[in-house]
Amino acid sequence: MGFGRCTAGRGLPWDQDNHPRSPELSEPLPPVAPDATRTAPAGATAATLDDRYGRTAGNRKRSRLLAIVAAAAVVVVFAAWVVWAGLDQSSHGLDSTDVGYQVVSDHETVVHSQVSVDPGTEAKCAVQALDKSYSIVGWKVVTLPPSNERTRSITTPVNTTTRGVTGLIHDCWVP
Image (cartoon, rainbow, N blue to C red; front, top):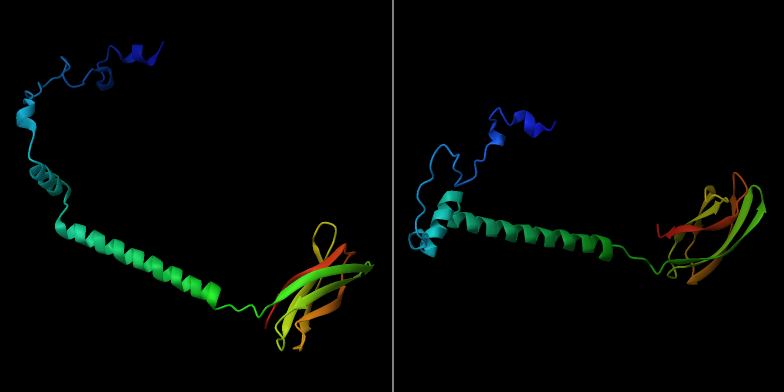
């Protein structure tokens, strides 16, 4: 037995056919005016809608001003980010290249690399050794003193906790 059969005899609201023009409505609808009398001038309709929804000329001006202020704020934040991220950080021509590595023992890996930096600039590099699951098993920070040469070859022995399978430069920076 479905739900419709249980409620059909009770006269519940959802069982009634209450759509417009239904003969079962308790109150008759007012007569419909012809199309000619229902149309209103465009200005009168707009004014009526503005009154109904509380729109005024002041609200429109305020909304426009708010949109302009929000757009200006977005531009200022973007410009500040560009200055902070792009122009403020100088790279000093810093570049590093991994040349190779040599696993000396279960507790030492030697990393061979080249570091290029502007002449006369000190640099630091973090050198790491990894095991077969790419976990860091050795780490060493190397300081490169200022030099007249742009590119320098460095050989870094790294002590490891377990046997390393590769060695490389993680990062270089100018202190």
